Image 1 (cartoon, rainbow, N blue to C red):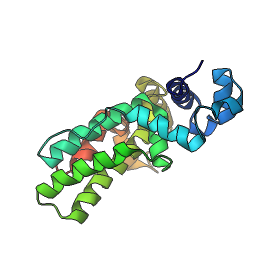
Image 2 (cartoon, rainbow, N blue to C red):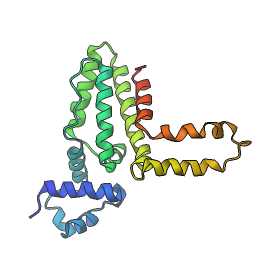
Image 3 (cartoon, helix red, strand yellow):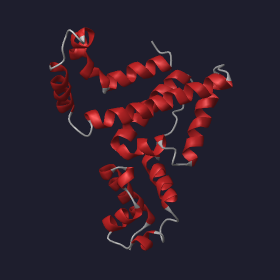
Image 4 (cartoon, rainbow, N blue to C red):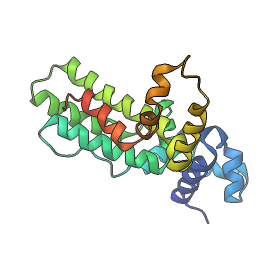
Length: 202
């Protein structure tokens, strides 16, 4: 007999395989080899399933206990990125605003408390946190199809093929820097470069 945990685990795997758009309740039921109505014996509706999926993926991802707010957010969002890359559907879940899990409030409370204790105004603290959060989610959504659903080597080769045919007369600047663009656009170095500037870490 299935358990709720098993249903959630299979749902996460399915969403990672086919995307959230392709993860319908009938599709999940087929993957589990049960009838669609049987699923509703485990979850009340799809929204509850999405909440359980997000809670499972991000369980254990806590705001670290660091007094320096910049280092606290730096550490947290690096861990966030790693979790999101391990489950490609998770970033889309958060970006679409489909989930509400208690861990979100725990994370925000810890981050805002550290920034408040460091002298940041409430507005500065909230804006800083969400600037880093939306940057990280957006970066992961950009990164996944380029260097995780295909090899980094294939992505670089694809870029070289696309730029090799550009007319230097029409694109003098782009053709001049093309060899420098690909290695940085979807890499950990680029992620760190952007996050450091959001957090004013030079």
